[in-house]
Image 1 (tube, rainbow, N blue to C red):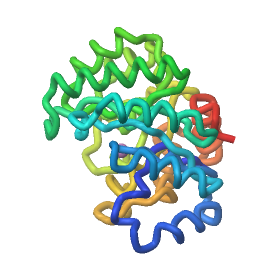
Image 2: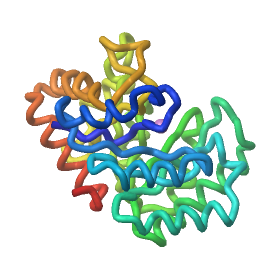
Image 3: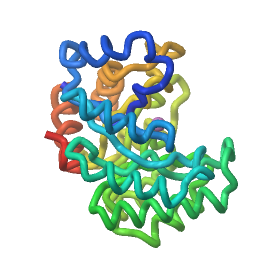
Length: 254
Ligand code: NI
């Protein structure tokens, strides 16, 4: 059994069968899913999805793509929703210099605001970083030590060590299974056994052999299988460790 520590089941690609995907989770070996909000448009819906479905938990926050839409009202909404028992983290937050959908100074300011909010609320953070590692590390250092995860980690071993030293966990997803995947493979081999989480980022980043299809939480099993092979551990050991790590970080998960 696994927990998918990062999914977007509210994405329109689940509009036709969201209920079925959620209803089939336990049959497919999934104990729980963390639904990650991306901005004002889905913060309340993520919390609602979690409130309505026992296996779903939510992270509430504003993604860097949407940083421009972060206002005091949105912050108040995040603060309010975070009191709910099924809201387990502030996320997905971070920096994305690949798309630059919001100006970089705005992304940085909004990341700082949400890191401060998470610390005030004693909640872990779910971090997104794309082509912005230097600025990300600089901002994280201001807040270290941190509780949280660097989702879909694909950086160097050197960066991983810095993140681990700050207290963060390493999120491992479908890119681990891709042909020519080098950095995620090195990270997966080296990450301490008590510091990795498994995730999908559904509907994105489906692992091999489902690459190109819509990703879904049960595909975490392909990631676990690959991880077991790389670390010369059994799949059962990897699953147990991943679940234990996820529960340790997100302490509101039952
Ligand atoms: Ni995501």
